[in-house]
Image (cartoon, rainbow over all chains, first blue to last red; front, side, top):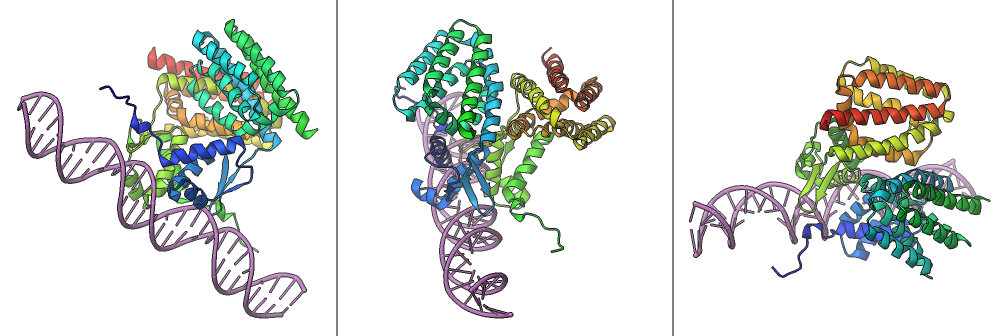
Length: 218
Length: 218
DNA sequence: TAAATGCATATTGTATCCAATATGAAATCA
DNA sequence: TGATTTCATATTGGATACAATATGCATTTA
């Protein structure tokens, strides 16, 4: 066999294609809080029936990205500042623990990949890419932990606050501080100091939350 | 209007009825790890079409209670000891934080309700009820925190390890220890000592995990 | 006879159709 | 006129029908 084969049972179903597209659109902010998602309209846009659309909406609801009401349909669900703040607290609890567990398991490859994302993040002039690169940087480090349940929950939490994350980076000193702090975290990881990496991560998250709160509620 | 009214839009849809029933069956252990869930069979059992069944299975998949493969269907997904252990670690991180936040917000009513569950748990001779009462006791205390995202995630984590939880209570000293520790936690809450309640909760969870690990792999 | 192939059946994924409910405007009534 | 009712339309929930894929057994072939 000379052909390049892969597991076709993992090929995307209509449901997952629609789900991924809608998820991206909500996270990127193309679909805005409160916006009504009509099954029929989406079905036509993707040229599928409403069945896979409904299943995609159901998944989005489980992820907390839309709220649905019987016979009324799905609307994009934003977060109040209080709700977002709770999720930042959650992250501040979880992420330090994950990185502490990850540090002793980080290979050279992981560190190099993270450094690449870190530098790409620092260099990129296009704010549209910041959210994604920021997330990839952290994820690369976290994945080394091997804590798959923690990561699943964390990714869900990040999905929900992504618009706030991007808003925070757009603040005047958002990028500068993020870059400084990313380098610090990376350094601690490279030095094998899990405790310091954890503490810096905690400060990184709490700092972001505090600057958001100052900016949005006075 | 003298009639007792309620919001009918919250009435159960076929999907949620099927979901709740399947979730209970999996958690209670009536449906066992690896068991295949046929859409058609379930649809006939509930006298509905396969559509709501599919949506229920999708929700179960998001909750991690079943795994599905395209064109192959859903099977009840159990956890390896390692996977369960990771979730216990997760709980040991999350639950102390939640109860610490909850203690200063606990009303007398909450404490009384928790005490009721605690005593019911201690008295109940039927092992079938232990899992449920145990969970209600802790939940009552946790809900006072008002941390809805934390609770959502926690409930999902508990669903996944519920069979292990029940197994742990069935160990020789499982119930005795659980009762002792519950009373300690309740006392700390009543005394307004969030720090102690948190530490006891952490020990409660880690202890349960350790005894499981000794029993199953030692 | 053992492996490969073809075929029948079972099961899931999706499309189409019907039923239940929501929504808003026209009609009615005080 | 302003509130209420009726009714037409839009939208979602669920049932039925069809298509795609999996699975196991009979058949063939070397």
